[in-house]
Structure formats: structure tokens, C-alpha cells
Amino acid sequence: MQFLIQLLQVTKTYWNGEIATEALQGIDLNVQRGDFLAIMGPSGCGKSTLLNIIGLLDMPTSGEHWFLGQKMTKLNEKQRAEFRKRNIGFVFQNFNLIDELSVQENVELPLMYLGFSQKERKQKSYQMLEKLKLAHKAKYFPSQLSGGGQQKVAIARALCIEPQILLADEPTGNLDSKNSEEIMQILWQLNQEGVTILMVTHSAQDASYAHHIIDMLDGVIVSRQSLNALRHNLANS
Image (cartoon, rainbow, N blue to C red):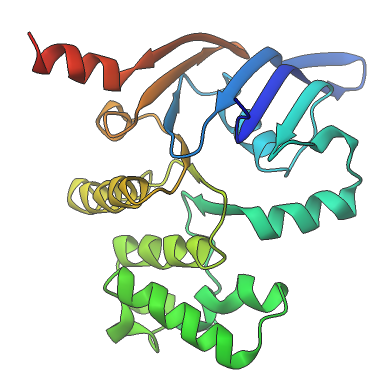
């Protein structure tokens, strides 16, 4: 079986002078198409570092990172950036929208970087806003939306390129419970439609939407729990 993503004995060490911090220690991780994985653990355990390496925002110190059968650790910085913008969608805790651009213009940005024509950008971005029930706010600016609304725009922007995987770093971290539930319902529905999702979260409620929960501690994966298996056992008990 060829995994969508495979990490083999990945480490990440940060240096401050002569002081070394081992952020990741021998990580092995496989991600299949259609997976929904939640990565949990205390602050500083390596969750975001792991997400950044998978998302090609950072490079491991050692080990192998395979994506779509290609060895990412063999690519140079320019090649990684090109691969990233075509294959990976990002959703961040702080939305990372550009205030001076309209909702639709924010969603269009990744398509512009990929060289789509203006007509194609307008069409694809509007279709994505329609999918997330935001088309009526296409000309709004981010500041005119609630936090939940802004995160929906961020999701639309991430999905516009039809990525191989959606990486979400604390996607509900700045939202109230009602908006958090709505965002998680959207992510769950997207996964049902085939979108592969890898999410970092502190929320057990958010993690309950995933297929698997990966627990980290001190740069190590300490457990991987299958919620699908648990749900199956409960349904048949």
C-alpha cells in the first residue's frame, strides 16, 4: 500500500547556541487518503512542529518524509514551496486572512499563485464560497465577519486548490463553542466527501470527529487510538 504521507524516524532538533532542544524524536507516521487524524498533547510536545514538517514549512533534522511517493527530504526549498502550494491546504487558529482584501479575493489568492486566469479564479472561489454558504458575503471584508465566518473563509481558501491534504492547526482555538461546533461539522462533512485532514487540537470534543487520535508527549508519539474501531465496538456491544 502506498500511503499519501509517510514519516520514517523523523527527528527535529533546534539549537540555541550550544543548547539543543529535541522537538521530535524518531517519529513514524502513516497517513492514508481519506484519513481524519487528530494530534493531541500538551503545549510544547511537538504537535505544531510535526504539522509544519508534514506541511513542508520546516525540514526534519533526520529521517524520511514521503508524500505522494516522492521523498520530500530530497527536494530543495524552491521545489518544496512549489509542491506545497499545489498539494497542501492550511487552516490556522488565527485565520491568516488579509484584511484589505474582500472575502472572495482572500479565497482567490492561492489560485493566483498557481497562475489561474482571473475568470477561473472568480469561478472557482465563488463555487467554494457557495459550498460553505458564504457566497452572499463574497464582497465583505474579513473584519465584517464573526470569528466563525472568518474561519469558513480560511477553509474555503485552503480547499480552493483541491489539495491532497488539509492541515488544520487549532482550527477552533479562537472560537466560542457554537462556532467551534459549526467548524468541526464542516471539517467532518469535507472528510466524508473524501478530503484528507490532519488536525492539531487541544480539544477532546474536536478530536472526537477524527478517525484516529494521535497522542504526543515530549516529541514522541505515545499512542494512536482508532475511534472508528471504538465506534464499531460500541455499535455492536
